[in-house]
Image 1: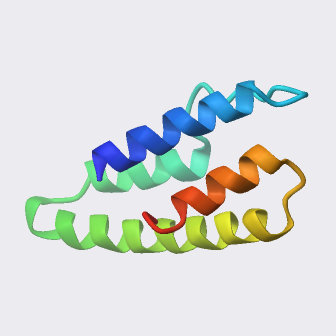
Image 2: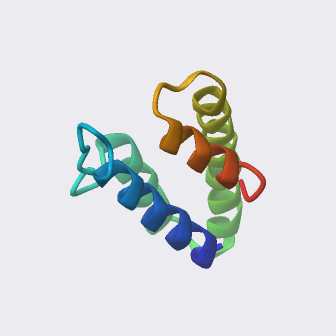
Amino acid sequence: MIEDHTKTSQELKSTLTGLARPVAPPAQMDRRHQSLMDDLNGADEDDFDHRYIAQQQSAHGSAITLFKTYRDRGEDKALRELCAKALPVL
């Protein structure tokens, strides 16, 4: 999973910087994602796996929806192609 996330993140960063109007990825997590990390950091050993799996299922479901929507309706061809390529892995 780490390899897949790293690869997709690198491809996304490269695609974003190559746009006609380049976009810089955020330098840090937003509040919602930081809250999820805090939740995992605060979990005891017996509850960690359950929380982690629940978060991952939710996040991947959201990512699939986002990537499918952009693949089908997005304006930028390179981003549409990136979404289409990433969907089978998601």
